[in-house]
Length: 127
Image 1 (cartoon, rainbow, N blue to C red):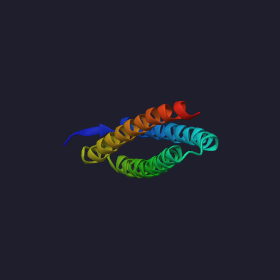
Image 2 (tube, rainbow, N blue to C red; image 1 turned 135 degrees about the vertical axis):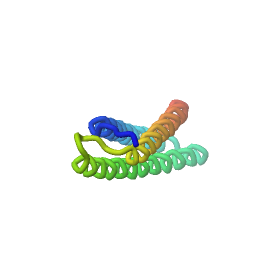
Image 3 (cartoon, helix red, strand yellow; image 1 turned 30 degrees about the vertical axis):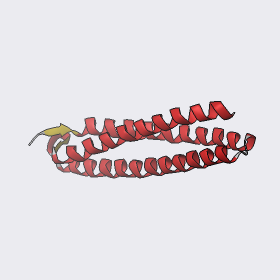
């Protein structure tokens, strides 16, 4: 079975955590902009869009929170495995979970970027 350096995995985990924190902060900024749009426009169709984006921002923040928890948990397991393994390498079994987390992070990033782009079009129209 293949082995991989725990340092490599740890660096990837930490990179994902930094990216997720960035997106969480960005969603906060978008929420502030959404609040501005809501204050300036009370039309029913605008308020429906405001509610839609508000819900989407909440969902993505929850997804980020859950994903950060999963990454930290995987990092803990990886660290424990590395301490028990020779020379700081772990078996490829944990690499599968690592790869899955990486794909989930990429998907979340794509979703947030699409949401941001859509919201910016909406905000530009109503601000």
